[in-house]
Image (cartoon, rainbow, N blue to C red; front, side):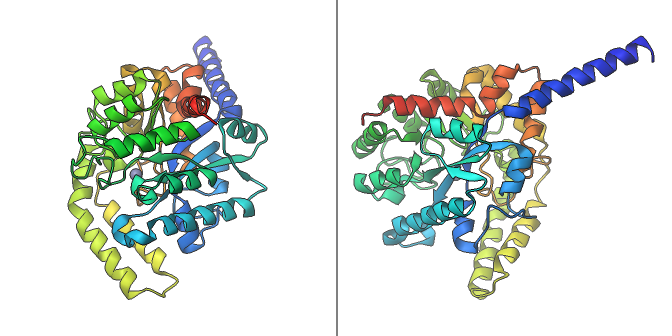
Length: 389
Ligand SMILES: [Zn+2]
């Protein structure tokens, strides 16, 4: 073998072993995955490997995903207001029951220390979050009850503005966050519940950062200066979150990573949603109806231009360069993005692709560990430390 070939072989080997070493014990911690509603609505099992949706235990194992903050959300238009909290409680219960049934592999985490302990034990850590302040219906009592059930962050608003915070995609009614919102934030700080500023208006994010005694997270937001779409975060807001120690966890939605993909998605969404609604009404008692919904979603997804993983890496790299590698994380939004994933990042088994990508982009092991989960864990610890028990 020539000298050059030997050298090449040695480089490949050390590259391989560096990746292997990292993958052996790295904590990959995703801030936002929406699987619990499928557990409740469809009897989805964490333990079985599926050819659809984006998370189950076998695929978590394959992708070395060690910890997840599972989202519980209630689309306000799908339920009467009086049923929002009840629906959320039912999904929270389904989550706990499913983790209990999967206790050989999975355990509920209530604290950052739990996440670390469960990860070291070889199990998967599952934490809960609530998406949308409307669910607590202006009630600190409901907020506290969700905390007692294990909810460790709340997204202050979802797609609509609620009674105390403006949504990025809703009416600007409060000039950010109003007095009631400020009280909610102070109660979240007191308990040690993280504030999630994804979905809320730019002014509301700045208010949240100002009002909160602890760092905040954006659990699933991408970069507006790369893909200028409403749900993404502008650079000055990213800087404001990071200056106070927060972390922005990148959303993998292909339409949030790439503006051309977003245009097609938005243009076709009304037709897609109408088709799904009509189907669910017609096939109300057909056990195959969820499969049929997924087929509709897939058909519309295929109309979108393909978005490669390198575009996802670009969003991560942008925040790491703008705010520093301490302020970016994973917030895939898997199982909340109707299958619209980047090509090569189809489900939770693919996280190692990001690790490889970051190695190739010149990131150090220390920074890769932070980006893949360490930063989110650090914020969770800071929020716990700021709590007043
Ligand atoms: Zn969301």
